[in-house]
Image 1: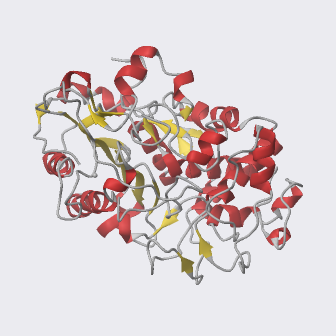
Image 2: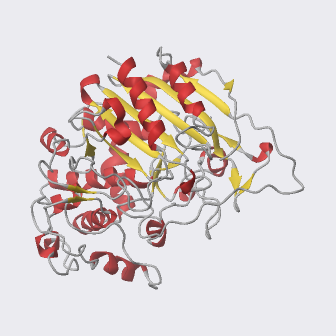
Image 3: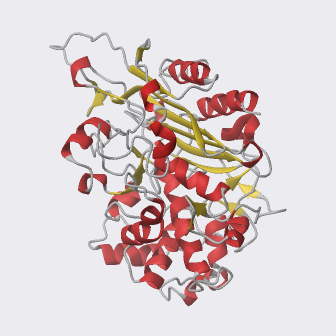
Length: 460
């Protein structure tokens, strides 16, 4: 066992009485294969930013390597009555389904459920690594089983962390959410951008586009200037429409850096992961995970792009070009650490007796700031515009029957999601590697809804 907590710091006490219940069992695996109708780059809660959709690829096997009989590990921790049903759902999507008939939805997944602050289920299925670059299906002996403490590329869930860092500065009086962004970042220039406020960055109503053009620029400084100079979408009016934007949260991160004098990764540690005790959350995990943990815990994503197999390297192309540290994507974490973020917001900004955010800021973060606004989302026409300060609200497309006006969370393009339903005091983290080996193989939303629907029925 790694010295890092199985469930993430802050959940260790709950985990202590549960780890002895872990009972590895075997699970069947049908042959490969995963959103495809999936969210393309730029979909809500998605990445990779500013990247054109790439064609699907069919995995190949070395002619010298016989087809292995794969039996992925399943580990279930905790004893709620619905653990077996949750496990069965996760195992189902290891195979092709009617929603994704050509491929499995993912190679592996981890789900963690907390009710009233206690872990009631923690399940891992499948593989953290199943394919090599090509993509080539690896021999069984070279595959890495998924673990409850596997470390995932969170993709756009990073935006939640960035928003919390902005809100922390608002609590300190260093940032006025209704001030123009240009007050803090003079390089934020362009037609109409003088009307963009900090709040609009967090609610995706700024009018900024999904992606920034930074490829080909020789230095990080030039890339940062290009992000700040990104023009508004043609015809966009700041504050008038919900339009998902990765650029907005990249700018928000630069604002945090400006007012704190720290690089984003340092600000994350100082103001969020440090106070919360989250030792398995951060950018560029190859710099802080031990060699043993890199081999056993890192979850792979892409295995077929020109970048080759990605494992411990951010999947989002723009974040990668920014050195792996961006406000829109780049954070890696365990399910336990993501759950701690959800619990922090559910508990009004307090974690283990320590106040991290003010109660008033938390209430503002979870209120619908986009009341009455239309939403523009080509991937999900008709979706609600409901959004707090850094989290989405009332999104049935991934929340299923847990969706209410108060339900909040976020999704990530790599197949990750955080969902919190306040009335049930429920935190659900579902992390999958649906981008391994190819993000176009399957849509992760059906399994997100299936798990949410199970808990809607099972948790009173």
